Length: 511
Ligand code: MLC
Ligand code: AMP
Image (tube, rainbow, N blue to C red; front, top):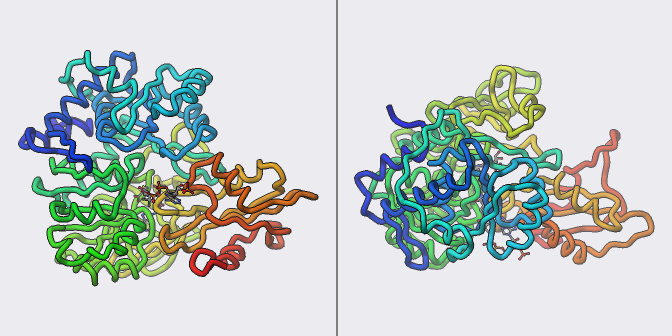
């Protein structure tokens, strides 16, 4: 019987390629598949020595590095629950995640050691270790005494592999629990659907604390024992240079927009590539068309989310149909997608409604949030994505909007209610509204509209700086307007659509 442990499935794929290069970094370091297995085993043995048990959470907020990836694999092979956090989160944002997930171990950046010591001590986190992008910190130093073989833990297929913090419509993030089965089923489906083969070479440009860079990209490469060209941080020139050797690239739309600004991007430069995949945010048809014109490649757009991993994909093989701009393709094999009307009836082809999903990829629910689970799943077991769309007569899903109040900036999710909460707490602020406006580089840019408290005056730039020093930079408003009052409807609700119209051109025309 094959193992339910996701890592054991990767390990099985390494067999024929064990001495080959698994990962090569932009500073020239390499790891073979044997190295990946041995070093993740060593980390797993160290984790066991800390007394961590199956199901314990391990929270990680570290810069992108190969050891950080190996540490994720070590958690999988130990049956521990990996909880990655965006490196942009500041101290004020961290406490909530620690309190909610109650990790047995927190791994952070060496530069933040002092703050983290205070926080973990206060919140009763048993172990704190550090891991720097350059290999510094206590984690790698602690490994030396441990053997580099380990028997991959047996897990039940519904054992948790990871918790990803997402959403927060009420101002607080929810931990999406993902099981080994969720991740393995999705990885196997994408691996087959997108035609992965051992000779493939992945160009890896995304961060590794989200579904896209960690699960979609890395799981496909590991399952096919393909080489990964590993960028510490997205660089258009490095990406272009690696296209000579690479075959698959995955990016959020902003990466494609930035690559299109490279004069060297053309058919010859991308001739070795087999597949360009986009997701995490809407790919504008203009970008899709410009890419096709410049490179001769048609970007494959797919759709997913933290709670469900991938849901739909445009076709890979021409025999399965065209890749259509402005659509996210058909439901993946084994995944059901339906469009639900407000009246509670499934909508026919072509009609717009809420996108709902069911399948082995769909998470079992949010960590310790029974009310949210009650609300976000239907009584017959479908998950409500919060996205609004239609399915056309050919079965292609088109996302036309979101019922959740969410901004996607450069592929990162920003929840207006959360940002408004921080702004409203600032001195001199009466209230605020945060919206997303079209942005040529980021897709949507964060804009805040703020009303001063009675008798107070506010200065936009100073307020932006104050917000930036409190919360992650990507959530901070790029533009802020001080106004006397927010527009409201007769019910007293802020009319965000009016604000979005008013400020629609702030990033494109600067008004
Ligand atoms: C960085 N900054 C951003 C930003 N990223 N601002 C808004 N939106 C963003 N996405 C700000 C920083 O705070 C900083 O501000 C300045 O930009 C420079 O920071 P940087 O780190 O040097 O930025 P850069 O390298 O240019 O990063 C841009 C980016 C990055 C697009 C490369 O954001 C990125 O890697 N995005 C990918 C996100 C991703 O992987 N999403 C997948 C989610 S999974 P200042 O003011 O201090 O200068 C998912 C499910 C699915 O959604 O379907 O896949
Ligand atoms: P996250 O919570 O970070 O996993 O973000 C998931 C959300 O990203 C989805 O609910 C969608 O709103 C959005 N998303 C992902 N892929 C696409 C896509 N290809 N087109 C439009 N939106 C997308």
